[in-house]
Image: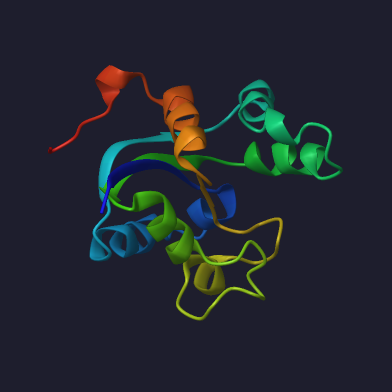
Length: 142
C-alpha cells in the first residue's frame, strides 16, 4: 500500500460545534497522521481561489460565502492510502446519505454545511496542500 498525503479542512460549521478534537481522533484512530495544521479564517479571495475549479457551478458563490463564514481548521494528513481513507471517514457529501459513523453523518447539518473537505485524488492533494502549506511547514515522520 502507498503512503499518501491528503488535504483536509474542518469547515466553519464543525469548528463552531467545537468538534475538531473528535474529528482528529477519527483521523488518528484510522492510521492518518496530522503532518501540518493551522486554524484560519479564509478571505473571500482565498476561498474563491481555492474553490476556483467550481467557479462556473451554481453553488460556487454559496460555497465561498460558507467557507468564509467562520474559522476553518486546515490539515495535511499522511498515511497508507490516505486519500481514500479520508474520503471513507468523511462519508457522502450529503450527510443524509452518509454511512452511520462517518464524520458527515455525525457532525454535518446539510449538503452545504457538510463539516469537512478532503482531496479527491493524488494530483488534487498535492495542489491543495501546496495552496495552504509551503513544503517547509509539512512534517513527515518517514
